[in-house]
Image (cartoon, rainbow, N blue to C red; front, side, top):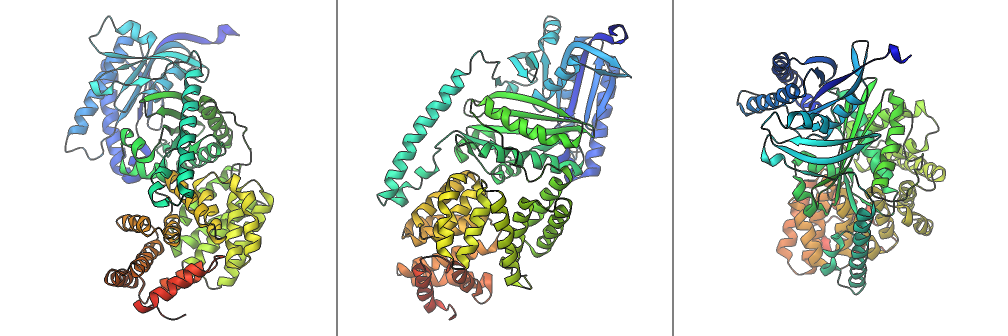
Length: 623
């Protein structure tokens, strides 16, 4: 049978566009036009250097060359031409490329080339920097004596079963970087994490000590220090060029955060942090200081239907080292769930942490259902009447496919609760009842999931069932690890009158998700004020009013709390100004009344009664 296999040694060249889907979403026509122009440049150079294309995958090109030198010179010329094109004012969409070049054994099959020689070239491309070229040692050995190029030795890299020695071609001195080589021992990383844990434990102990001595305002900065190794999962990039595949990247991001959050030895930042960093293009060197992040996980989805690739990279940003890269392949969309599990296990193994995968961490393992879940969540998070009804419709479509999926029902419960908060409910009692029943069912069927337990307790607090709600706290506290769960448990602590514990959890939530939903900041502002730390509360409130919030209700609460604090401190002029600002936002001050009504669910209502009495002279209508 071996005689039928057409094997040969070939030089494989892989080129791929960086962030192609992002460009497509922004301006599809201009992106296609720009890509066609770049493709013309590449085809011209391929002809010059005798390269021939044997496969394409959306925005990727795979070519074969008769010579390693030809392939490298073609790559260098191509990147230089693209750089010139991007510097032109006439170029509307400035595309960037990654190139990988390898020489190895390949198999010719039906006009295509397959085998390790091609796989390693693809992994070298994924390893390359934007506008960069990464080559294997087999290529380096041929070209180094025949060219005057500058190379950067990246050492031995291991991706899955493939191990290869990689080099960057330095087209610019700024491209020089350090990648972690294949480790001889895992002890250095274990030692580093152990040291971080010991130091963080000491810092955390001092923080608790200061907090319970009554120095909450002074210790608030200490609450923002890391108490365990922290990881930021950046949004996976959809590089397939098709918007309909966005849910795959969103699903990978969400799933990986959920998996990693189940480890008690890791601190995982919320997805909103990664989205904010990506949107505002915050450089890596600033991320550590701004968010106290030690490790960043970047991922991308590449390829086309029946030929998907998932590339993931773990970076130690403190030392500017890429610790690990991995390339996963799948053909059937049903396989993405196995890949999701493997990603989480691989990352945790790399960090030398023991972990057992819970196969129920996903909302659903049915790709059609999971896709609808992602779409419904996206609509829900836009927090407006039209998208609220759209979210409900999509969730119901998902439930038609899986009627017994209690996790979907939990999120549908949130939709009904959001409808009440938006003031668009035609029957608030019915929406409240549905929110409670959906959450109750999800809690009973998923006893190890903190979210429905906390949601049930919050709704029970509103129903004045405080004793029942507060008895749930011992069960939900150890389960809360995601930003959402921590925030929900913080609210339950507040409902049960545990203001100090609630503040502590909100501070942890804000540390892990500084760009998470504004309702967290709203309740933290209430708690800070309620605890009597007026100075700390004012600093926090004024800082928040300088920022943009997705929910007006949070901003109105900030004004109410500032009005209350200033009355207490005797600054009536300032208090009146803040109260008037709240009324300008609100019309006749109804949000102030609603705010007080909502929060009267607390077990200890004295604070809210005090707010009512304090604000009456400013014009708060009588209830």
